[in-house]
Amino acid sequence: MAEKIFYQSSNALVTNARVVLKGITYPTANITSVKCVRLVPSNFYFILFLLLFLMIGLGSGLLFLKTRVIFFLCSFVVSFALNLYLILEILKNKNTYYLCLGTAGMDKHALKTKTLEEIEPIKNAINDAIVSRS
Image (cartoon, rainbow, N blue to C red; front, side):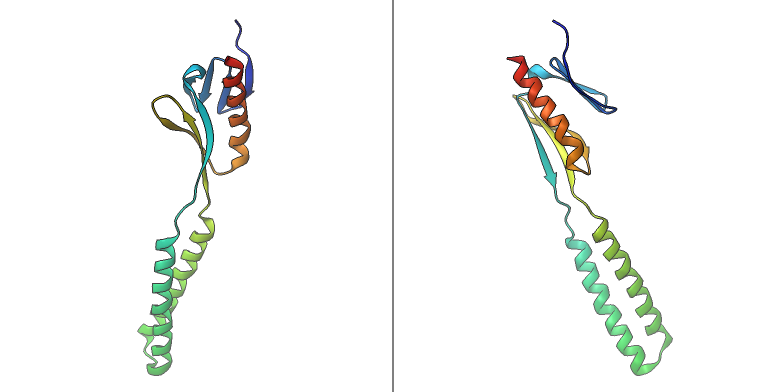
């Protein structure tokens, strides 16, 4: 019986007999389920340091206005720059999506992307390949 191709791209090939993701081959007969998993990044430490540097910056700014010592001005400028950097990092921190292949023994995160639109057609093709097996 010839292999029927359900999906083909530069990093994925899905047929009725095998699934090749990023150069790793998984037999379709061993795959029992497939799902998309979203990993939401934690911004806890970014926000914690943001609040810390905000307090340092405000304290330094107030001390500079009161005493006119240049150290407090430098401290204010550095904390402002660090806060700006942390805000950019929080905005840059995006979700990660995994294509999770379920087998009889375990679940395997087989493919990792930043957008759900890249994984969805591959997931649908693997589901079609699993159904066509029976």
